[in-house]
Image 1 (cartoon, rainbow, N blue to C red):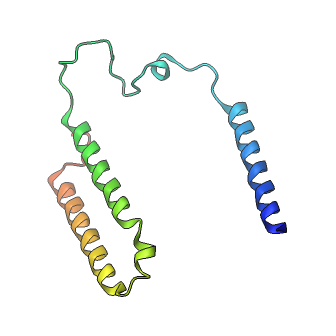
Image 2 (cartoon, rainbow, N blue to C red):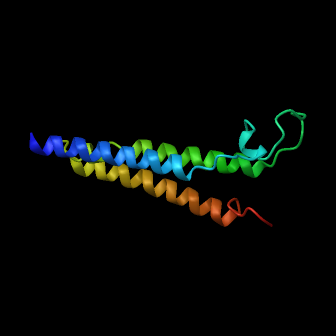
Length: 116
């Protein structure tokens, strides 16, 4: 019981310190970029038919792909407790190898080069 009380007090103190630090160090006068609903630099009230760089879509797709990878690998520590952890290791290795090969392919094709 003493350890639970200690952890509760420690986490409460840490939370209070972090909130106070945030209030003290926060920028109180945001610029017009931060006040706009979109922080990407585009005017949200302008025309929606302006050309949009395809590289933004590529970065978004790569982000979703690797985000999905994390979601697939998240239950891995619990999956090692199954009856056959070797099968779990094989499937995990297959997922990581496929994603690594895809990343290497994108890199070699120049899809990750932002500036030309």
